[in-house]
Image (tube, rainbow, N blue to C red; front, top):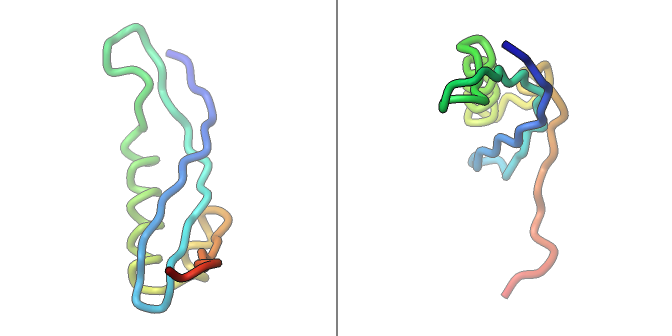
Length: 76
């Protein structure tokens, strides 16, 4: 089984604003049709980021990767 790194973008819209977390996760690869896939630990890591952003806890979310705040540049 091989493992490779991939950056996933997790976004959550929260009351305080909109955030995107850039989180590096390891993908597992094998010869099955389910490949590549996340380990349960990596899936929990992404869940942790989502929950932290949902609570507006940017500091906790930043433990998993880079956090960006999205701001609209034009309003229709």
